[in-house]
Image 1 (tube, one colour):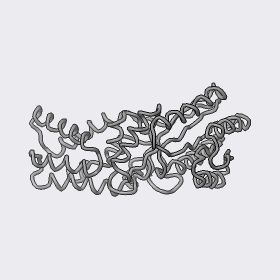
Image 2: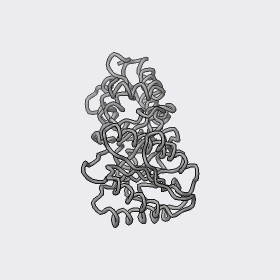
Image 3: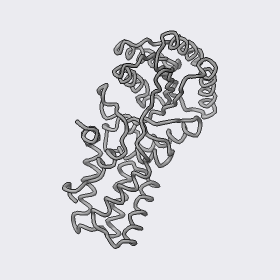
Image 4: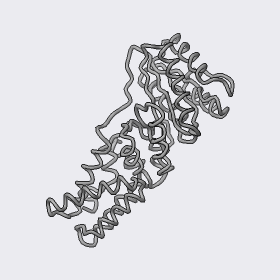
Length: 308
């Protein structure tokens, strides 16, 4: 199964909603009038593409119709494809530099699948022949530590942890030295999923980054924000808050298979301009895949032979 097929299978609920809705709106005339374009904008909003993003997309569609006189379903879909690709940007993947320690800081609110994503990444890296260590730096929830330890057992990966309530920076300190001693390629740090105060969040992550800079100055450090597609516009608010409070290098969107609201990836990209690197298309360990903008957009929109 290629990546496009995986996206279409994993995002079936969203595809059925958006693609089928597009075809239904266009079916009566085969070309779009103003009322139908309004319906199309409403469809994108309902799929959680975001009101601002949807409005901008349809403004581009209307501009193209005025410029070319072509209001066909094919032309509208083509414009949407091009503009969605512009918002999502070029395909980017999570890069691991060989021959040095790579540190992944996993950030995001509780319940987004952050710890599960850390475990799945650990399995993925090990399948690529990389040695991993997991760091249980979410010390504010005993369940988070236990969940990460389960993933450690499942993947045969050492998990560095302290008691619940310990200083997360101290856990990171020990984790770095454990990773260096084991000559690990990747250290995945599961941080606390709290967002009650941006300043506290910034202070905590800054402290962790200072520890990393001091103890592993040659390490490649990447901050990965994990958000849950099923939370809709809350995911956009979370993405905005985290990117304002901390330097975020990339985004992982989990649970794209969970409902018909997968358009939230567009809303997040439009709001933050931070590259989406990973997408969760199911519950299995191999259902965490590189985010592919073209496959994502082709999953959302109908193509020739699919109602166009």
